[in-house]
View 1 (cartoon, rainbow, N blue to C red):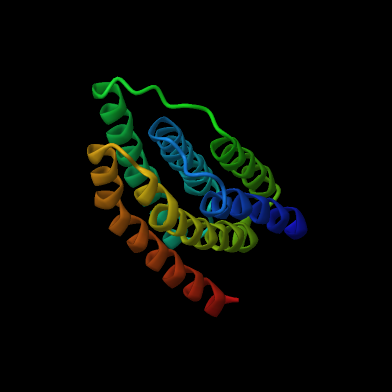
View 2 (cartoon, rainbow, N blue to C red):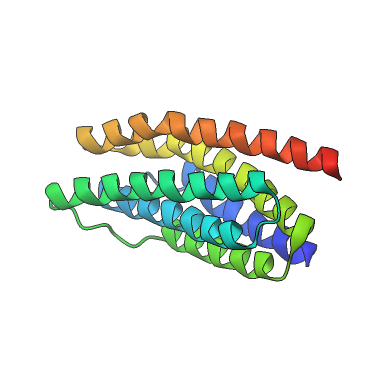
Length: 175
């Protein structure tokens, strides 16, 4: 089971890190990437909220659901106001596939193994998303308001990463 989880996480990380290598995405593609990335984390958070075994994991999952729902709503509101239709693209499809694979792997786990796998994925996920935001999404964004939204939410992703790393360390101590 652990191999499946790592393989799914690796595919997801490749799809996100591939953003920096692929041609610069357009604003409609960036909008789809943002909404998909948020939904993937919301879905994982909902699973962790219901199946996590530690208080810290459940609280972190609730934070992910709340914060990523807010970012997604802001992105959808912005593109609606700007009359931009999010555009399907390979990166967003890869994010969704990786998210689906992660959920399938997590559903096979319980207890401490679930908590560890969820948090390990959240660390890798946020590292990859921050890299994509910094190296691809912000520099590629042509619309000033979309770029401003990405810049505005970037610190929250950094805070999520630090929180996930702290949780990861505390789970490792429990062994």
